[in-house]
Image (tube, rainbow, N blue to C red; front, side, top):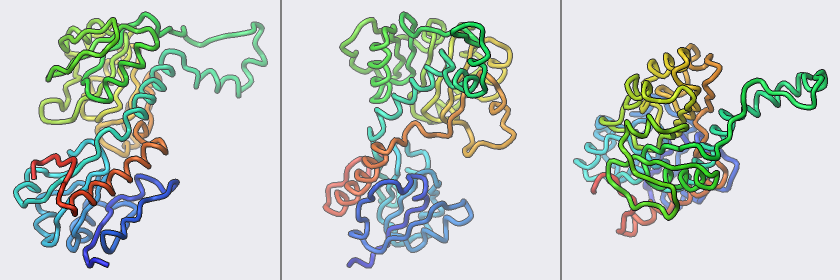
Length: 322
């Protein structure tokens, strides 16, 4: 067996309810359920391979790990690694694209259907006995909204955005998309690529699917939110910092938009005093859009194949040009 050392920094984030690949093929495996910022340097100092989901790997961490040859990201996004520093040291950073497309797209519509129908709230009233006491055969707390005929705006039209568009089309929605780098149009109509401001004005439901970078951080702010219809909803299953949370809070509390569905927020885990937690028309799930059992199995199989490809001299899914 190789004497090389593979370190998982936050293995607990992918769960243990499936059969993991045998990473021992690559050397000694050290699995940490979670790793704090203060623990990271010590845990990676002897690593040959680092695998991280959300633990940040800085230039200093790399400098303190002289044996480091490879960094694997257990996600599609890679903002948890200083990729420029890794490139400067000749260390490839490899991500896992397209492993959770269907899972994330499904969760977008889980949130959309809850926002439009509030089946969760109604089911809770049934458990509380309200239906048993009702004089009518049915009741509702707020109007239930059809998706059919509404307009879905999709910010970012990569694999996930395109999958969301196909599902929206299946619901009979009109689909608008914004993509800074123009993509091929899908094979359904009605569909159009539009500017960001036009999308926010025209859409009944907006779903974010763009990467987080210096240009996109805080892009959904008071200015864009102010363009939305009062009846419109916004959903974010991408990255929390895409939305300015103070501006969103004001929009929700002031009634300038109808509601929001968030699977991601700016700081995770959520702070106990985050005011969005207490807003009735804001549905928040704990960053689970990606993590169906099937998606996590694909993820860990692809992480294994990325390392195998690197060792075979044919690195794949390299995001930093090494």
